[in-house]
Image 1 (cartoon, rainbow, N blue to C red):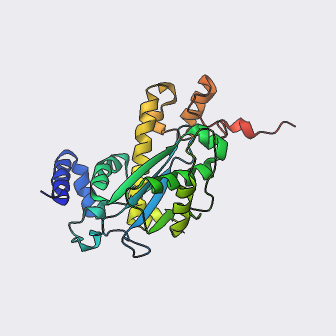
Image 2: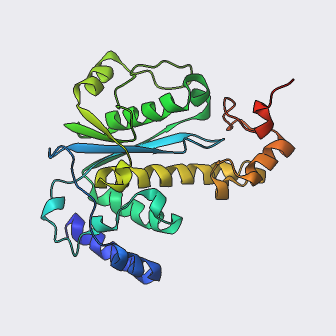
Image 3: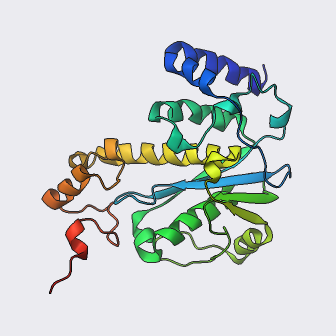
Length: 257
């Protein structure tokens, strides 16, 4: 039995367990675009958790299999994939193992709060995507990035708590052409798949550290600045997972006159 047949079997099992997935399949009208560059080994990358008050910013990179375009679109599992923000948590976690099984290569990177506080959240988001590209077991010929900033705009940032890129790694990133695409996660399949992996891996991490500090309810809010989360910060203070460079409470920006 080949990998595709295994995944079909796995999907049938999931359908039996999750009736809502059947509705989801019929609502999926068409597959997102496979490629921007038309090259075989194009990587899509995206991040999750930029706006959170606690926990890492997480990025993923995905290279699609070259046979996607040969699938019958009516049976293509890739038609299930969409921007992670458009999917429920349940659907994202159903798709996670399917993506991992079907893609040519994928990788995930966490940049933790200590490094975020050192180099800022924008640089941390870009670095997480850069690290994810370097971790792929296939070097991409082209990279598409969700957002409006080139992936290699700033390379080699140094911090006391994160990975330091070697000169060879910097040259690899410089050598790969890349294109930033606004709302790319709703247009290109590889970016959408990366957004699902980034979101699900980060959610799993936040659920683990929730057990250590349950009063912040990270299992539900995932570290985002909800009213409940901020009230917990006000009541209990901060933890080792909070981003101290962020506006944790609204009054932090009030001016003393």
